[in-house]
Image (cartoon, rainbow, N blue to C red):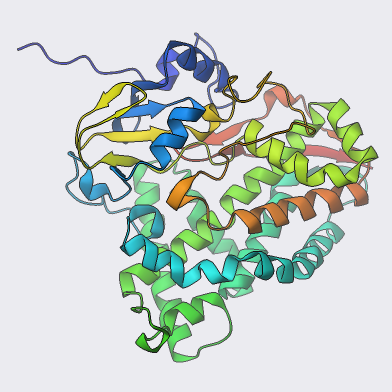
Length: 401
């Protein structure tokens, strides 16, 4: 019997010499031209069906036959030693519903509005450390410390532990190799387990402490140890990695489109719109978490066998020309702008409001405080870090003053 042909990776589909990390969008466009769903090989993860059009993506993100729990995968044996607990991205209703309900009240519009003065104060403090002249890396000096401080404040992570936490987080979402990820997972798991136990013994007002002390009197089953670890991991990592990429990616887009930066300087009230266009144009969350077919189904006319993995490209869907005219143009006045930057459906990003608030405040205060920003190097030489789910700049050297 003839062995089935292995599908291509996205790099295989790129023209020779093309840097997929720097610009994956021409490859997505070529795939969209051929159809909404394609079989691809995802390095380190295996074969999957890649969804690249907005209509098919929205449908897939809300299809109850596609499950987030990896145990629906036909190739599942175990979690590979990298999973930290069991979090909301890895679960389906009713477990997902219960876990999300435990934290949803802390990310309401009212809660985020109440957080804004603290976010503004953090942005002011971080800006005070930036030079007024010379060159600075805006990723490490601004885009990173602001959301790390916010999410660690929210969860109750001691300031002395934040640098180590970020190193573990980065190793997990952008690993150098499997051993690097395994080591980070082991260290972060041990750290979180000890912190959760400390919060349980000496509770405070931070979110992690509240979660660690939930009891049945609330009307909800308290999270298990595994669920607490998963929740802490997800909130910590998702609570800052994507926002770092959003802040730096927005600034990169503005600097490479000086007409849009001039427009924003003239009309600062467009800052929120600039963030939305950045979410569409440079999607920091590049794809959904893997979904698995719990039963056979069709996506946009493509048959998906039970147990197969499905990867929904939020980045490709958000540049679909059927919904976004001239999709490769960065336009902060774009309206409507129904991008999928934060996903869609039950697993829509819980922290979307917080990320929007942080990025909007960060951008507004930066442009006001440092009005003369410019690339300190050729933007074509900048490098982008990528994983299956995330994409962002490794650094953004800028001249200030």
